[in-house]
Length: 421
Image (cartoon, rainbow, N blue to C red):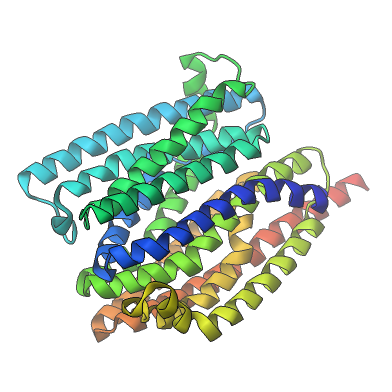
């Protein structure tokens, strides 16, 4: 694995993510003057459920598409995952329709009303895009991934702004998000024929699903737990505080944590494919990953210092005085963001070394710590304290995960060297 090759391929994937993020950022100059902190807080609660449910709808089979031993296996597993996502999304839509019509929507969903039903199509399109992205990643078609990211971001931004200007304050952002993912899905579908995917039968779908059962057994529960715990401020803490406070935190997460996930996902796509290939061919992987971690942490610390110094005045200047309260939440999230810079791009490593079960227990421990942090915030009646404690335990876990990921590659390398002698 040559660091130069990784950098070039990441640059291709990241170009789409950076442009998409730039479009989203530019849109905020309009959106945050149309929508209030309370509107954005409610939208974030809506989207938090989607991030959790999409893991159930695909059972993380898309991860197996990249790591599959052959292109035929990858094609069969990808098609199985697409069918599974369609079935589970349809069932979710039926459940949400019943709850909406019966007036049984819980918590803050009662404020959204029929908009809650948009969760199902959002899960469907987001799940499809993740599966198709994995297929493109398998064959190193990074430009198509970048294009889809841009198409989705641009469509969502335009639609949200248009609906907001038309007075759709509560429905504008959820509907724009759904249609943005739909546009990205169309872009993926248009180019899918260019991939060298073998024709496979339904028997092969099921056989590959059984062969890759570690993904629904270990990876999906781990990611479900991790996503659920990462969204606890919006799934649980938000229930006890006003939507405006939730909206201020949501914007802080948008500008601090979400970029980490976008950039980390771009690196993970390339590193996953490269590392899997190098491990299969017996090539060392530890040293390039150590260089990557050192560089990522250096950049993250530099950016964090700038944000710590200037976040509050920048938010007020760019988006108006009603968003000036974001600064205190940004400060609370910065240690977590620095930790994520290294851990997120390496989160594929247990899928290569078969250590998903251990990772699941690590994330269970993190969930317990995060629950305690949120509970303290609720008990003390302090939204800020809950967020600060939540970010602190998240940073601690992310640093620990990075060390564990690298330890796995080190031990594997050592065993291989001993076998060679």
